[in-house]
Image 1 (cartoon, rainbow, N blue to C red):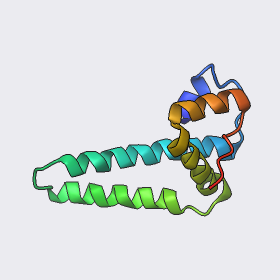
Image 2: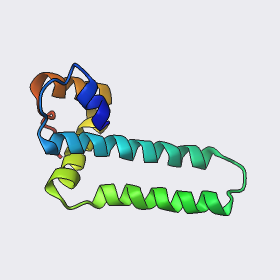
Image 3: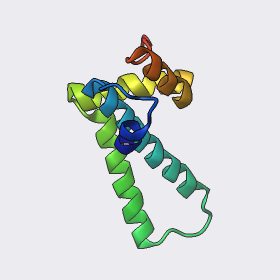
Length: 106
């Protein structure tokens, strides 16, 4: 996500770290969750490696959710709340035009 943000001409400005890292953490989290959903749809018996990978993915998801840092943790939670409510495309467009996340109250 960092590379996409830096190379995308729609984001020519320097984003505050909390917004950039929050969005990047959201993408990582959504990726991990999509793999978890895909794994649960697989009806075959999971192998030892599959179980290990699933445990590792769960660990990384939990790390993202529970991060206490203002930049990564709070950034993730604010961005994720907006993405859940509005959708990723709308949040990215909003950030592009307003240089901040939409103000979503919890």
